[in-house]
Structures are given as structure tokens and as C-alpha cells.
Amino acid sequence: MSDLLERLRGRGWRMTSQRRVVAEVLDGEHVHLTADEVHARAAGRLPEISRASVYNTLGEMVALGEVAELSAHGRAKRYDPNAHRPHQHLVCSGCGLIRDVHPTGDPLAGLPAQERYGFAVSEAEIVYRGLCPSCAGAPAGPTGPAGPTSA
Image 1 (spheres, helix red, strand yellow):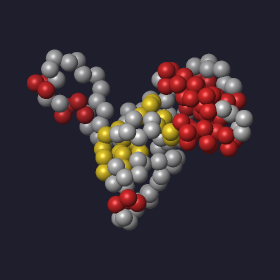
Image 2: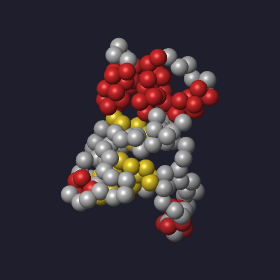
Image 3: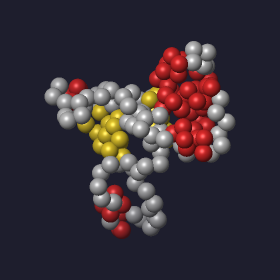
Image 4: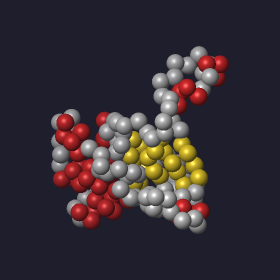
């Protein structure tokens, strides 16, 4: 479970009912929702919440660095509350499922000095792509299949 609500409160972020419900919807592990998915889930908890409030709240959380915005090959942007623990993403090329993964080793070690072209590289983003068990038609792994909105 992520600690998004605690992080936002720790920043002194004014917690209106709309902001709170958006943060609650996003809070969790392996959560990578689109803005429309956030709105649908938030409206289930707070029917009067507007789409504009959701978009504004997501924008504020991204600007604060508490939520990461992900783009995956022409698909809708997704929002990741796991913004403070280094991780990479495993993305299904079929359905768009995104899972957080934590490979071992330093990803910067794989980039030789001559390939850095003088850059002072500070971070690397690696995206692993393939087909999830559902799209591949294969039996699920030890944790089973989980949709893009699973927690």
C-alpha cells in the first residue's frame, strides 16, 4: 500500500473532500489509473465530484512530485502514486496492464561511458514490454492476472 495520503498531509496540502477522495482512489500498490478511471471511482464515493476537480487534483499531485504521470505508446496517461520508491514498469502491449517492478542492479551501469555523450546521467527509466498472461492466453503466474486498475 502506498502512503499517498500521509505524504500529502505531511506537506500541509489542504485536504478538501474532493482532493481526499482522489488521493484515496489512487492510494495503493500497482495503481496506474487514467484520469477517467480516477473520476469514475471517485464519483462512486463522492457523486458530486467533477471531472475538472479530478484533473486539477491530479495535476497538483504531479506538480508536487507525489504522483508520477505515465504515458504508454498512444494510450491515455496514467497516474502512479508510487513516486518515491525507485521502480520500473512492466507494460502489456495488448491490454495496457502496468505493474511496478523492482529489478536488481544499477540501470546506469549498463550505459557505457562512450554512450553517455558527456551527459551527467542521474536516472534511467526502463519499461519492460510484453503480453500479460490474459493477453498471451497462458496460465497466470504466482500472483495471478491483474487488470490495469488493480491494487
